[in-house]
Length: 627
Ligand code: PRX
Image 1 (cartoon, rainbow, N blue to C red):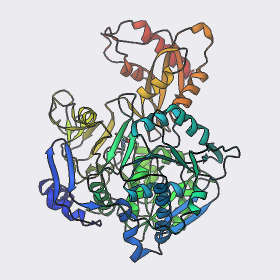
Image 2: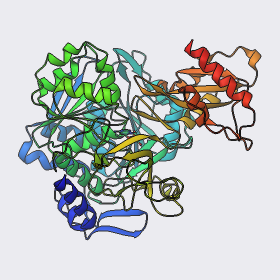
Image 3: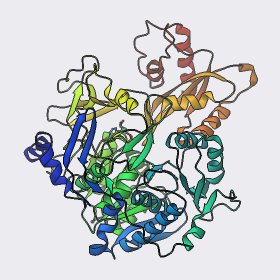
Image 4: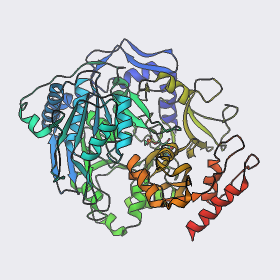
């Protein structure tokens, strides 16, 4: 491990030299004056004064050497479409999208909400924003109108880009009425909506003077060339909303130069993806993994990236490996839940295709249990690399780095701190480092490396308070994850310290779900906790107190309220009605105790409980559910 250790040490001890070398992996219109400005902790400004553009690095700079190489391969097992775009074609499409947006009034610094399914136009729109210096905010297509409206009001976009719908398991998931409703609900609705009509919605309606048909608008600007806006490295590139402790999602703001450098460097040192090769990331563009490893990183590296619309088991459980064979995928990135889904299928599908091109499978987003890690490693006969990171960091924080040194993998562990990250496990109370083998909070000693969030959109104070406020006034970044390090230096992640839960790799806040449950007119109050689930990792479970129990409210109605407010991804596994919630005498709901009971563990210290009868009701409800 000496090579890795030296590499990691140098990234911290000789920081400026290290990162100026990494900065050479991308194109700069103007080089930076200063590698890092850390004069206003904990705000880190990377490559100060440098000018660059994400779209230039992802597209234009490859035109000369690889204009005829495939940049984007779109495969939809939902609609049966398959199309690929060379770098030259991608450039043309992105320029057209940028010209359309420009014509609709979008300029540098303007926000654009992208609410799109997994289609090439989503990638064009995102890259077009980057090209114009506009700030994209992609909202996952599974979020409902109210969630979308909340994000619109925070970002105050000039434009929304959407489509008539997505598709899941062969069934259209229509967007338009939801988009219309979100714009009615929002106070700061954009004046224009650019809509790509896939023909999934026979009853599609257009709002006059607001909705613009992508295909029509495109006709007018077929020969457009739109140049890249050269941005100062620290100007915002995008906002991506993510869940935390409160019910209000945070807009994670990312920069331009630091992000491009971090991604380019991660392709070299972690993912080992080279120009001309193919990467297949099975996430969705609405999540951070999609931003970084479907779109930006593989394209910045001059690779071919695969945009897959579909599920892992349709038409059959061999579809991913078929794609690997067909497209000669060398780097693959997925999530543990998907592997657990595959594990339930006929294992012969794994042997049907020639996957000899594949070098590594990377998995992240949620804990990777040992049996699943072992199963997939053996089934593929390839190294399966568990790595750990967050929307906030934008790229891996803990990982094996085969591009630096091939270190042995340990099942259940995302290996070691990635270069640039000064990771410390701190005791929650004393803020001192814990000994090896002891549980602590995974923290990063700032400055955060390039690529990590610059701030919370529009709220510097929230950024400092939320992430750097937990350790006795010292500026330490908290990941809000528990971790442990063994004697060999391998880390293990033990779950969140806050109220964030992870459902099939989708990050959700239990407070957000509680707020959604509370929107039901007959719910007085509720508690939502995450409980272990063999397939999805975790599932939300709700306990609600009704205002009028005689009204005949059904649990189904409450679930539908959640669907409408947040989206079906947040729907509780079950809703139980109780007459009171377990609370402390000062009125705090004992969520940890509820969660423990639901997972069959000891509820812990109950000396502060107001009424023990409340916990008894929870216990009974869980027993009934099991029966
Ligand atoms: O709790 C950790 C879990 O997912 C959270 C971040 O989720 P998100 O912001 O959606 O970003 C996902 C980027 C891959 C973390 O705080 N998590 C992520 N990776 C792992 C993990 N938990 C255990 N093991 C992992 N490899």
